[in-house]
Image 1 (spheres, one colour):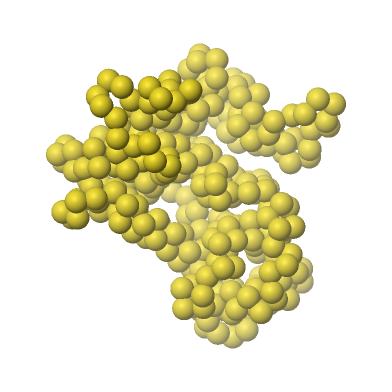
Image 2 (cartoon, rainbow, N blue to C red):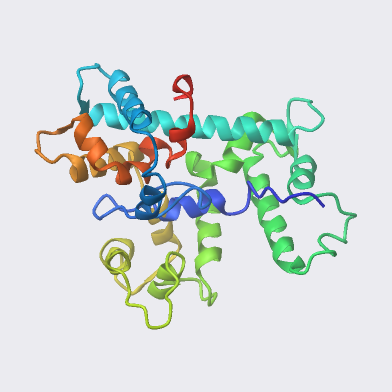
Length: 302
């Protein structure tokens, strides 16, 4: 069996859960868990990033707008939307090349399953793995998501349908699967609700004797004040849907507002290059730099 690629499963769903709130501090921003990082950690790891690379990214934010030397809210929002769509486009293209193994212009469920999990005789899936049951559950979950994304029901995904499978948050018809997967991931006691401790456990693993960090307390407040809409101390399916896929929310604008609020030191409603570079760690932990990945891109790839 080859390397598990796991582009299905819950990676995209995990990213949605910690997109923060427009009403609170965004300590965890939208990205897959293999990419989504605590900005403090990412910043520490990228302090060695050459200053010219940072400045080049900031220049592109401005040149995407009017090129006046300042980054306005509108320019920052447009840049974040650009990086978001570029990430979706790039990830789908890479997945397409991997999964369309027969090069017939579509991705069948069997192609995706075999490329992701390896080849098994029916009924013997994962018999050679110690944690076979976990992988069986992942496979069943991926197949369920694939069937929902496959709107015409032919078991063959077009590029649009594969995009829905990989990025269900972008498609209204995938909303129920996003909510279902989130509930399955967080509802550890399987009572049909997400309790505050289950909510926090998905973010933070407490060490014995360790004091709970301030940002965890902030997330508890987020749960109480903004996630738990009916104030019964837990989240039901409707509240989970409102949380992970909030209605009529311009996600790039929310993130741009947060970055502007945290970085605009002179409060003139725009960002100078120095203001952005001075708060670089926060930008590295955001979609404005594709969660730090843009630091390794060539200029013409941005």
